[in-house]
Amino acid sequence: MTGLDRHYFARGNTARGVHFLYDSAFQGLHKIFLLEGPQGTGKSTVISRLADEMMNQGFNVQLFHSPLNPETLDAMIIASLKIGFADGRTCEGLSSVKDVEIARIDFTQAVDDNPFSEQEQQEIESLRGQLLHAYSKAYDTFATALRIHDDLEDIYINKMDFHKADQIGQELAGSLFGNQTLNKEAVTRHLFFGAATPKGAVDHIQNLTAGLQRRIFIKGRPGSGKSTMLKRIAAAAAKRGFDVEIFHCGFDPNSLDMLTFPQLSAAIFDSTAPHEYFPDRTGDEILDMYEHVIEPGTDERYASELAPIQKQYSLKMKEAASYLAEAQEIDSRIRGYYTAVTDFSRIDRLYRQLFSEIDERIRQAQRSI
Image 1 (cartoon, rainbow, N blue to C red):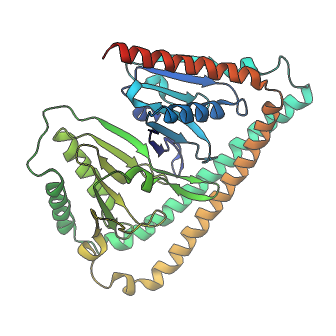
Image 2 (image 1 turned 90 degrees about the horizontal axis):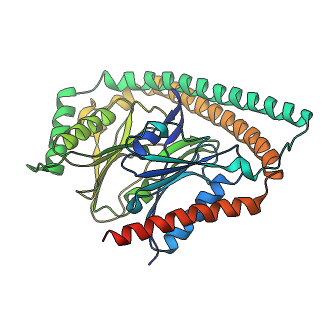
Image 3 (image 1 turned 135 degrees about the vertical axis):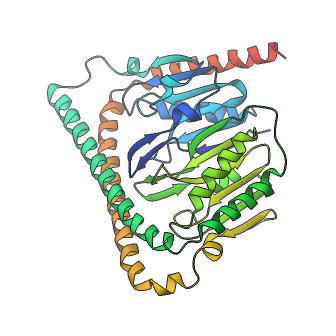
């Protein structure tokens, strides 16, 4: 039977700069293989090959995508074997994961000795500087968009019934947990389900909630208490011993967009643009915060104020995405230099080395049964 794949991000291009969640995403593993070397030396390809092979053998895998090139992988976890693989250039924070062995695999050994002329070296260094500048422009523009978004939130916050919002959060927590308390310490992981990419927002909500029996789609407006409610429910879950995956907003990581509860087979998520979905199966339900906690008629009363703010916000988000597209193009040019001087027969040997490590981990697991 083919294994299942779950898709995440743990690196985000956000309004608060680049943001990493790998230290939380990779907690609980015994060993992490850190693939080191510049872009274009086959690291993502090797991770993808390992993922395909493990799924063919029936293992479930967790796949972590690049927010710059979302069709490629930055990392992978095989949870049942308690091992992970990550691109050391893009996955910051793994050195702070507790109680884990880190094995560094040097992919520069597959690159020819002294591969570049002095002129090519200068061009690569120039491109690296341009890459940092493009990222900086993207982050600055996202930050401007966040300030505009705050103006949207202010309108709704001023028309919000906070007492009612608190009551709804308590009722929702009660419907999830009842009187249950688990006699264990909760495991809490922090992740992203989506990311700002050169093509706009990308998310994996449908993949991550596919096997869950209950899904609660939170509707509403900016400032209608969605993230605050999720934070309180996450705290209540941890207090009661329930494991929870906490998904941060890929635009503003200080906000939350989704919680999933493995023991309850349930998810609650912000189902508004740019990740808007609607119920399509048994166990799906809608919670409309605008309907319950915002003064009726607010949209209509403030339409003339809301429209220009929403337009400014949309324009800034598109501008930020254009800077990410610029970064992607520059990154691709740097990648091309290294791909041209990489011996992929050596990459294949590194793949086999890593696969033999997995094979040994499987044998160890079988001997312990």
